[in-house]
Image (cartoon, rainbow, N blue to C red; front, side):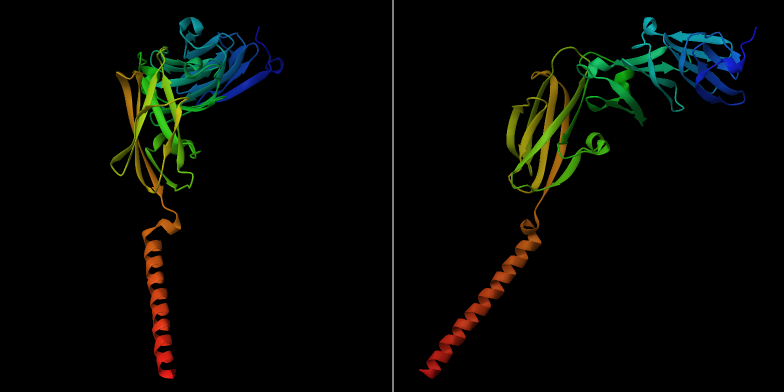
Length: 302
């Protein structure tokens, strides 16, 4: 006996090209009002090409015509509760769960790579993700992380990615895609540099840095603490900051070069100096003329 659509309370719906809609309810997955073999509570549903993706309390189901694929924690999924599903037309479905992110091969419907949220740090919860080119942006309760898809798909021990940027930068694109920035000179002579490191190895990592100004070393190799350090910008110029990340000082996995251009204040520019010198010369010239004229007039009147 078929269940009447009136009796079904659908909580998620998605258009399925050529077949109307796929719907999710507490009693399972429906194609229009026709039930499928998935009878668990469906919390989110999507349809791409010939695949229907249904999130349940026991992982993800993929319905491909008459075939069904079930992916859950036992199959390597980082958590069964689905938060977000994304598909950008490539060969992977991206599935965000309460515990992490998974890439699922659209051909085999098997997990190709995962990242556990706890690998990003203690008590990290991923709320949302976005994919831009070959980078995955993760919005979490501890800030924004960006990782290379290669790390997610081909995780290796001691495979480290790191990012370096000035504290003043707030735009995420500038933070993680720019290798240089321009800041105006500050009389405090200090720029705080922030380090974001993703390391899939359980071992602690070592971070050191050195600073050069206009080709001359101003700060020799020094270890960084608390994933940040200060650059002493004792004047306008081009600062090259080299960051070394590894398991220890003898095993460096990643080297980053960051260019920091400190622009002068208006009175420190060459034009301002030229104007000041010319103005000083003109004023001195007028003073000298006045003094000479005063001496001449005094002699005439004397």
